[in-house]
Length: 232
Image (tube, rainbow, N blue to C red; front, side, top):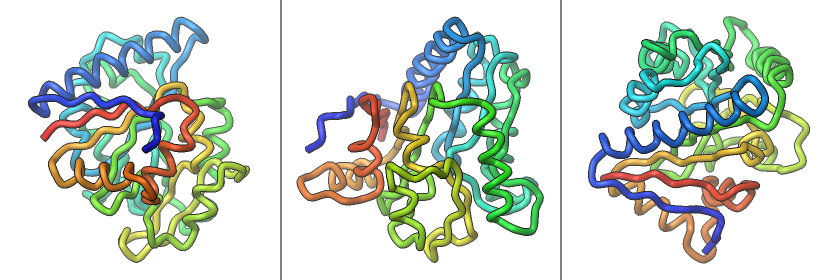
């Protein structure tokens, strides 16, 4: 098994959200103190809404924080499947309404052009990112590193010069945009937020000897130990 992770298990999802909020807020505070700003990249899906709502009320100097996405479906922000919509409705509220938001998907017809536009914005923010919070699917994907993605090996290439890439995978539904492995793996603080017994079993399989799921490859490539937050 890889040794580059630490497990934090909680009795309830509410306790997990509170603990993850505390840790992320502290990391953002540290970044602001160190360089005057902080960049936070978050994931979408059904898992993080409770965490987002808790984090939105954290006593962070949100006016100095930029929030972006780990990945995004190439859909309008008004779509119920939009991660940007999820973040705006749950995280960029309350105290966190002062944060600046950098979307990945822009209202363009061409997904490759949208990826290039997002990459320019990300380069202007500067790397490494201060905080990245990942999720994981039951197939072991994280970000939009789907096992059946046409671009999977390019996305997981630690030497790729690309920061943002388009993704096409039958299991993903819509085309997607995602941060590439080097961006995620170089984050100053990298967390994995998962909930439920099925995802715990998926993670254990990925971390077992011979595991090759995308989440395992991200954990192996991470420059700092990945902090895993789990609750049933």
